[in-house]
Each structure stands twice: as structure tokens, then as C-alpha cells.
Amino acid sequence: MIAHAILAAALGALALGLTACVPQQGGDCNDYPHCGSWKIDPADYVKNPAVTTKHEYWAVAKDGPKAYLFPRPDGFRTIAAECNANGPDADLFLRNSLCEPATSEALLARVNGMGLDDALAVSTFLHAHLLFQRVTTGGSATIEPFPYIDDELGICDENPTERNGVLKTTCDRAEKSKSGSDLLGHTYTETELNTMPPLLNKYYGVSSK
Image (cartoon, rainbow, N blue to C red; front, top):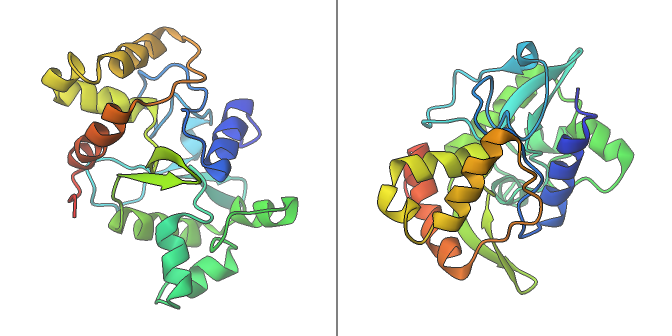
């Protein structure tokens, strides 16, 4: 269920665009995407067969008769751009209140209460436009979309030179998550902000355009 505190913390971080990583524990798991960062019954996870990236970033889960995505998609840059351009998927996003970040409980209920077909369609769109990049908002830099512990572990495993070099602190921290260490408050360095996006794009199998 989406009421778990760890999920609430993650959703709040996404909505606020924080540079620090959200609380994450138990990163070494594979029941569903980012399973060290949010807790659901694995039976509620719905794998999207239309996703062609190496990994799923936005995961779909059932919550009774409704469905939602983790992390939350409302207001994400590619969705906002599609809405502003009145593109082919704009109606999908409008009816689910995804064009802007939810600012009320009523809007949040719509974001987290999509029909399953709509949730899968949103996931498909987001993965078709997935690209990790460094972004600066209000003078603060971060990686968008932000990497979860399983993403960090993935790029650390795939890139031993960086893992033992510029990403050593982050990779050591991600490894500690396997024992349930509290990971609140980690902020990426300037070097990490520049190094990680292309490695994440390679890990997900998307092009760094």
C-alpha cells in the first residue's frame, strides 16, 4: 500500500526536487524496481511489457482497483512538455492530473488512483523519453530523474574504474544499504553530478542525446 512512510518520504522529495537522496534501505533486492526504496506486496507490481529499456524506472503497482507509479510522475519534465505542446498523450496526462505536480490531497488521489491501462500508458511514455541528466533548479543541482539505490548499485557494478574512483563514496554508501543502513541526507558532489548521468543512461540502455 502506498501509505508506507518510506514511500511518502520519496514522493515528497520528488515533489520538492531535493538534491539529497531520499531514505532508502535494503537496496539489494529484486522483487520489483527500486524495491529497497518502497514497500509493497510483490504481487501488486505490474510489469510493463511495453517498456524496452534495460530496466524499469517508473514502476506500476496496483492498489485495489486503481494503479499508480513509483516514483510519482506528476509534473515530470517530459509529461509537462507533452501537455504544453498539446501532444498525442496530453489527454492521458490531463485526465489523470499529471501535467503539474499535485498540490492538494484531491489531486494526489487522482495521481495515485489511475486506471491500470492509463498507468501502463504513462509508464510507457516516460520510458520512451527516459534520459538522465544534470539539472539546476533554483540554484541547486541534481540528477533528474534521481537515481535510486538499485540504480547506484547498477552503475557501480558496471563501472569498476568509477566505482573505485570518483564514485567511491556513493558506491560504498549504496553497498551499505544491503545491511539496512539509514541513507538519509546523501548529496552528490559536483563530480558525481557530471559523471553519473551518462553511466545511468548506459545502465538503462538509453541514448545520451
